[in-house]
Image (tube, rainbow, N blue to C red):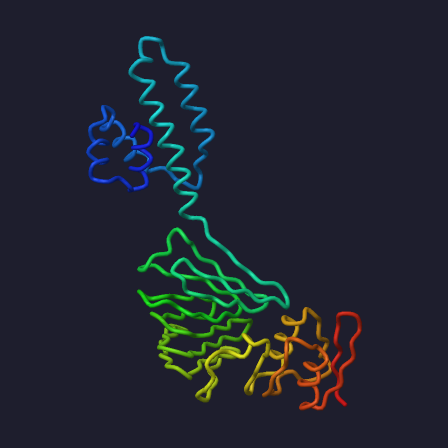
Length: 299
C-alpha cells in the first residue's frame, strides 16, 4: 500500500495491525504525527481546504532549490492532512433533515433500521455518521410514529420535551402549545420541565398550553393517522382545525366561533367533504368553501 493510502486510512482510524506497522515504518512518521497534533488545534468550521492547498503550493515554489529535496515531501503531507481533516470534519458533522409538506406522509428508515412514519408538515433531523448504538439522537418538529430497534437508548428531542426508549413503538406529537406522547409497545420515558414520566403500553402523556391533561388508557396498536384518519379525545377545537389544515392544505377561517371548546371525534384524510361534516355536524357548525379557504360559522 502506498504512503498516501496509509495516511488516509490512519486518519479514518481504519488501519489493520499490519498496516499500522507499515505506517509507523514510514520515514515521515514522526513528522506526520506532529502535523496531526498541530492540526487538531484548527477550528474546522473556518477551515478552507482550497486556500490551504494553494498556500502550501505557493510555499513550495518559494523555497530555495537546496531545501526542495527534504521540504517538498513534508509539504505534500501537510497538504494531504489539511484536505483530509477538512473533508473528515465536513462529512462527520453533516446532518440529515427530512421533512413532509401539507397533506404528505413519509416512511423513513434510520441507520439502525429503526423506522419513522412522519405525519404531514413535520421534520426530523439526525446525523447518520454519528449514529451508533451508544448515540441515537433525533430531533423532531411535528408528529411521528417510531418503531425502534432494541439497543442502547434512543432519544427523540423536541422543543417541548425529550422522549427516551430502548426498543418500542410510540407516537410523538409536538405542535405549538401541544405536546403528546403515546406508548403502544414497551416502555417510554418522557422528560418535560425536568420531570420524568414513565409510560407503558396504552399510556398517553398530554400537555396543552403548558398544562397536563389526564388521559385514559388506550387499546389501539397504532395511531389512527397511519390509516389516514385523525382522531381526538377532548382536545380544543383549534388543534383539530390546525390538523385539518395540515392534512388538506387549506386555510380555515373560524374567527366567529369559539375555538377553545373541546372536541372528540375523527375525520378522514381522503375526502374533504366527509371530513368537514365529521367536524361541523357534532358542533352544529356550517361551512362554506371559497377557493382554498373554508369559512366556519354557527348554524
